[in-house]
Length: 117
Image (cartoon, rainbow, N blue to C red; front, side, top):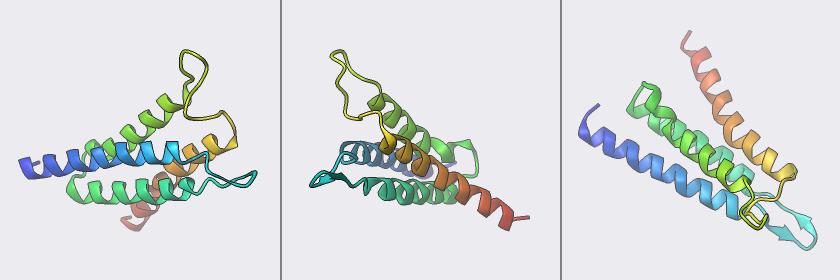
């Protein structure tokens, strides 16, 4: 990997961090009394796009770096703080965020590998 590709991989990993922060903090959006977790769709599309972009740069395990950073940020946000407060409430929206944020890129990777057979 050249220096330019490493810088690009670092930028995409930083984008994964920013995507995780945004999806975590806007997950609790409500319209009236109804929760509307639209960031689940943003996470699914964003993590899949990040995986596609990093796969174009490298075929090594480093292509999963944005997904690893995204997962780490979401899991750290799910842990309650000292006072029991945290940005995420343990309910169905957090599970849906993890399922879509990791499941859709995993399915996309699986489907792309099937096409290469």
